[in-house]
Image: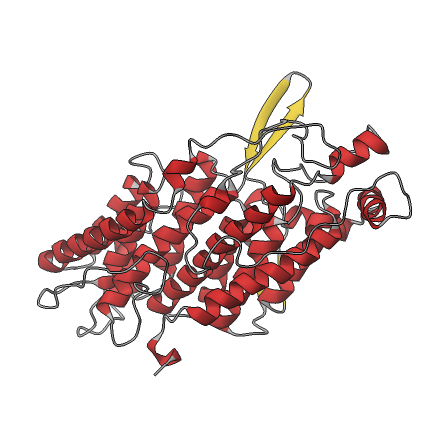
Length: 445
């Protein structure tokens, strides 16, 4: 893997030398946890999981890490057992055994991250590097063994819970049926791929009571023949915007593209460009915020976990509406009724238009990040540099989510009213998660 830990000597200096002997951990700095999430992000990117499935990977992996922290620091953190749907109990640690709970959190994250739909061994090299670093930074053999055992116990409990979320069952559900009904979604160029995850609303939410807890207003009715209709106006607005994009607008669209598998076609040659998807982008933002805030390892784990849970539920809410309304993409409408040669600035992803997934999860994430780090938390997002896209700076997480609305519109893949509705309803999901879940004890005591 590309993102291995630093050498053991560096880790010794980073984590051990500045740590008082009375502390329970050799991994005090949050940087290690951020690197570990990034490693999972790389696996998700290279395996090519769509954003909906990726949100599941991040959620369960982070919850496993968080439960290790909550188990080790019961005076500081609440367990999520009893707070998340179907998650009723978690094994408590044996307090008679010395355990490094941060080390256990790293290992539990990797165990669950690899097991939740990943190929076996996909994170083994990275796990080996963590273990080697722990040993060479002076971790006693008993603490090393106890920490591994506790991580394994927690990981198994999280995986057992995950198996009841209906993911496995939905793998055999029928595929989306394509029809020629006017206004109904059909596959789009260049891949003409089948609709992704049409039954995701059958996945068990973590905090919402059901996929339909927050039902959006109906989309604007399809009416392309009447040029005075609201539907025609939103269609022509997309076409006009894409046809006259400024460099700044192109940058905004590209920055928030996050298409995990873009199909490039040049003559008879086809190849896929891989990037992280929307939840992977927001996982990066959590890391950027945690490092800027100089958050502790434990607070960083909590922030990642809260945001991952919000995005998981936000996708369920969004996909419930997508495959209820089954609305056609701008590209399809414009090609059929206005200009057959027109193409959006970004490549259209393979699922219905209403509502917007990226806008939904972005606004949900913005709410939980605001809870974790405060409002008006200014930061520079460097996530896209590895793809050759310049940084963007924001005055708050909500500011970033609002820019995402414009990005999907500038990209030509969503109608702007859809993005606005999506932001409102993603915020509802994020507000629910941020308000209902109690992580830090000082929230309630």
